Image (cartoon, rainbow, N blue to C red; front, side, top):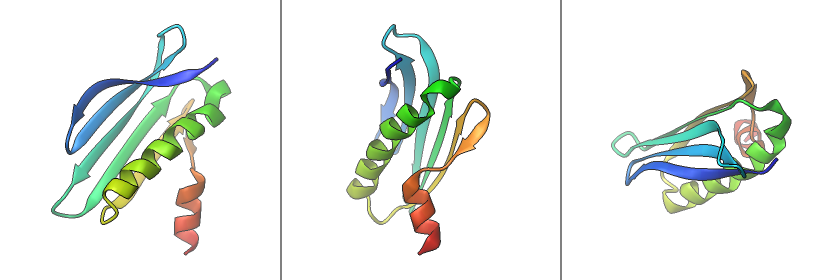
Length: 98
């Protein structure tokens, strides 16, 4: 099963993206909120299907990296969940080690 982003709401400082299958069935969401004054970006994501966890990471990581490049001054806080279990992206793990 392939998954894709389907934009639901997009503004300069916030976005909500539905995550859908190739049949256009919604299986989750990803939300970004940017707080410019405090220089923080919050990312929340939920995916119902555990079987596509790696696809979820492969979809989210480049998108998050792209947003971080556009606004490098923002500190990123994220919580991603697949099937009720927290998911860590590689970039988060490396950032915590530094």
